Amino acid sequence: MTAEPEFPPQPPPQRPPQPQPLTPAEEKTWATITHAVAAGAMLLSAGTIGFVVALVIYLVYRDRGPFIRAHAASAVNIQLTALIGVVICIAFFWLIFPLFLIVVIVGVAVVLHIIAALRANDGQWYDPPLTIRFVH
Image (cartoon, one colour):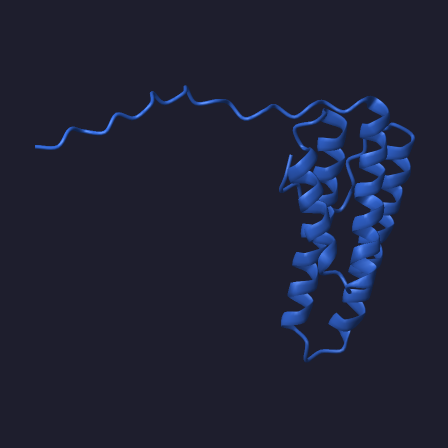
């Protein structure tokens, strides 16, 4: 008969480290960067990659401060609202009018990001109009 091998006792499970809160200046900087990069990516990719940029920044920084969370959520909401509008326009691709609407939708989203970036840089809270609040 063989003896059961002895295993060392398991250490207690450790909690994952909590993210360090950002300073108010860092929150302002990241909130501004969120909107600026999302707007730039939206323009360079015809409205597709801006959502990914905004979502990644939201997921990484949402627990680091209320100001960056609010602005990153606004950026995601702007991107999702614009994406829904663009998808609806693409569904009606056989009409000429939706092509014009895609340009308008992307343009309005970029303007909202620019306004939000300026507000974030000034340290102001901003809830963009014309957007659906998917993320809070």
